[in-house]
Length: 301
Ligand SMILES: [Fe+2]
Image: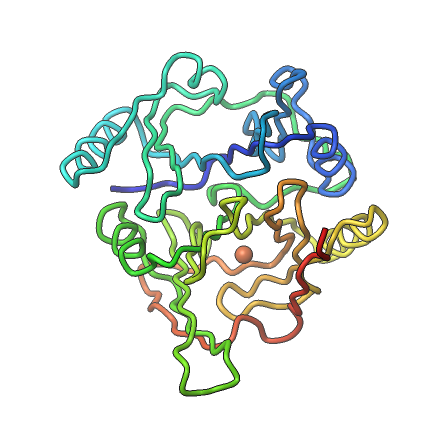
């Protein structure tokens, strides 16, 4: 299987107005007015009709991630292969296709229980992206929009599924010593790329799955000042800053993390490396960051 990139994520929220304020006034996204209504908000960050579709519902959670494959035959072959591995795949119906602005695809669950959609024929949006906060542009060209990081205790089976069935490659394997006792086993993280130069499109950490279903998703801007301004806007709005600014070891990203209205975090960064996978060798890290990235849990409610 050959996944081209992370195309969009679907989110459920109980409070659309909070997301609208967050997406526009903190993140600097653009609202796609024609794809939004009283039940959903579509946030556009580039030439795609949207990268985040936030739908009104009963919970705060990640619903699904849409991954782009080359074409109809690639999607059909992927579906057959998953079926051969005993994975149940469900075709997206006409309503689903219209909402996602795609020609077709199917949905399935990975061994950690995350819902993924494999799709083809995403519509392009001819209206140009104009940031609500003067951001010059998000770094997405040929890279997918960003990455998603999940948590599961079923990490080895899940990692094998992504590398051996879905065709992802290992970018970095991290072992983090979380306990002060060096005898305790470290926490394992797998960072994986698909068929584009983004360092990782999907990552897994060995931890219980959070109620929102997602640890974080990431968007990348072109300038460090745009990261700084986003941090200022988040602070002004009293958004919980989950992690201070820092520089990651494995993908070189300079970023901070903030909580979204749906509970998971958004990593907001710049300067991520874009390896050439032909010559790249999987790295093994024991530290997440060169400096910074001090994580603070949200205050108890
Ligand atoms: Fe990240």
